[in-house]
Image (cartoon, rainbow, N blue to C red; front, side, top):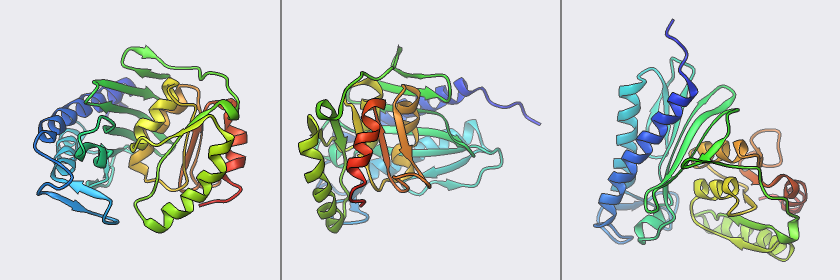
Length: 266
């Protein structure tokens, strides 16, 4: 039997491949825009995917295959392989594609590795700023070399809360109704356009909470681990108030914000 991998080695592999994919994306961003050739749509006309997304995922998948050929793959743009090791890599090769195509800063590469209990290690890399968040289960989270946590103590009325919106018009209308309840109850709302970066903002204290009621696993696999390892409360998955979504927040905010958000579930 091969030796079990060291979790720090898995994290470093995620970081290395996120940096490599980020460099590829930066090089391609100079010649891409929202109207460029090679940009298509997925779930709706406002949900783009580009050649850059696909190139980034291929680079990551090829790197993982070379380094750990028995591990499974699950990628947003179709990378898929069953695991023979009990480990699966969950890849968002470009989280924040709209931001990327508009030339904005808030996009990233997110890579996590999971076992049957959830994420073991992960990294989120923001190429335009050079910032990297990473974590290992039960070993804490970091932004670059800075250890993160604990979250600041705050109450709901003074909490800065991030969220995201669906690409489907009918769901956006429902989310707007929820936002009508949340906005008067908190300090303010932020909508960055990248779930992974929103979760990292909870981890490093540049936001107090983040929520979405429906989210994809590759959007949050690494970010949720980073938030949890920083000391944030993370609620997600079957049997919780967010079975298809996620809530991550400073612990003191978690209960009142969850109560507010679940008065009307979307």
